[in-house]
Image (spheres, helix red, strand yellow):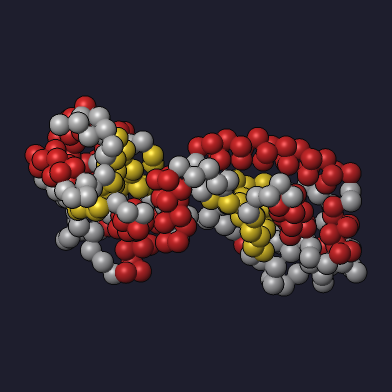
Length: 289
């Protein structure tokens, strides 16, 4: 039976990575969601959906590592579905191990593949079991740095094919307090002249006009802004094409109060001029100078 008008999204990923959230986002888009249907029943299920009145054309099927029989036959299932003319996409949700461990600790839940062991052991086993699924994925979404709303937004963008530009967040910080774990790109601006050594400027921050002018009007900073702006224009065009929903950029100086604040604010203003959605966070602004 031909299913040329049918679209099926297989949703898989590591436990704790947001599979339930992704399924909810697809269901809100009108997909009919089913969890862990046996592989031998999928083609029959798709046929039944096509014969329904009205026909069910958009289907989301969730699968996890607990269904070992499904995983073994999964590549053949996808191939068979596509042979009917249906569009079959595989969405795989990934997440950093340390983030998964933190999420399980916060919720006090037991990892499904390690009920008597550790979350780390369960995650390691799950990665091995889901290896073939991950390799078949049409889209791998890393949820490590996304909250639940950002994850839903990213899934909706991918599913609908919306070409919305990546949302950029600049985070200014001080290296003495550590690197922000959410930052995907890091730029060190400690080579710029430092207002900390100017007695009148030291108590102020990069949000004050005289401090910002002191940092930004220097020839070295002007060159940095020009080169960094061109580099980000190059990267963001490619992130947009890839469908990356969010990008976090860290700008660091020694204490996180002067140079990094001024540069992050200036870069954010530059990107906003192009119409891009940009957020700014000054992590260490309130630290003692």
